[in-house]
Length: 107
Image 1 (cartoon, rainbow, N blue to C red):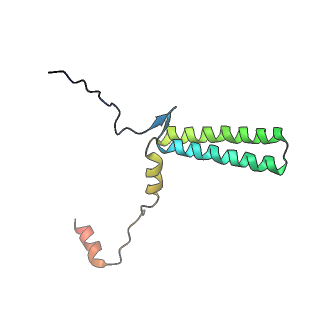
Image 2: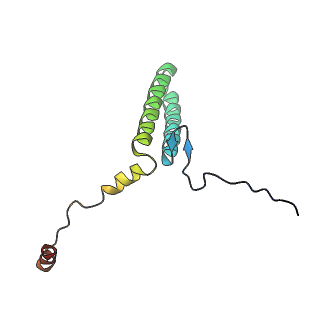
Image 3: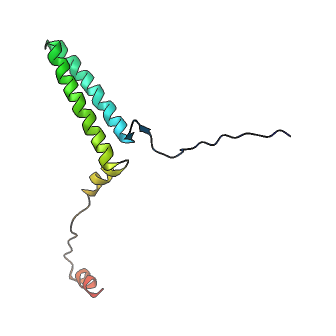
């Protein structure tokens, strides 16, 4: 009988990570870069000087990278989604029924 060799796939069910960016932040950065490319094409076609175009795009790209990396570092993989979902939770639950208030006070 021959011996079978199996490879172990490590990292299954782990989120994607690329150069320190985790999960959805990779998509945010990619979308921002595509937006900057389109913006560059528009302002170049309009006739703005190429050096001004480059200065605007490079500064906006730097701001985009800094912002996305800060979000990734601050909130992690699921933190930003949890923060957005937390805003949907009501701060106070109001009840106009006297019976439910009495039940709460009795406990």
